[in-house]
Image (cartoon, rainbow, N blue to C red):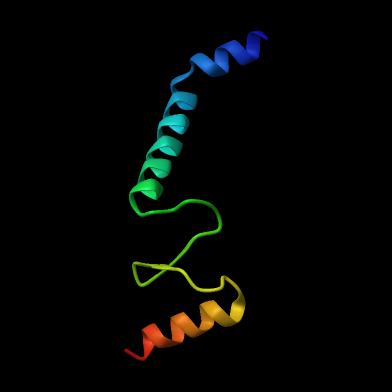
Length: 64
């Protein structure tokens, strides 16, 4: 318990929690509702998240 209390009170742990919260806020802003969520050239990928679907989206992006 001594180590746990020290870790919870540490600035390092506080910084890590703050970073995770910022990541979660960014994800919510971008419309992420779960994992995995993929973005291709800054656009949320809503297709089938398998190799073929992602490859197709990336190839289309590269050809435009």
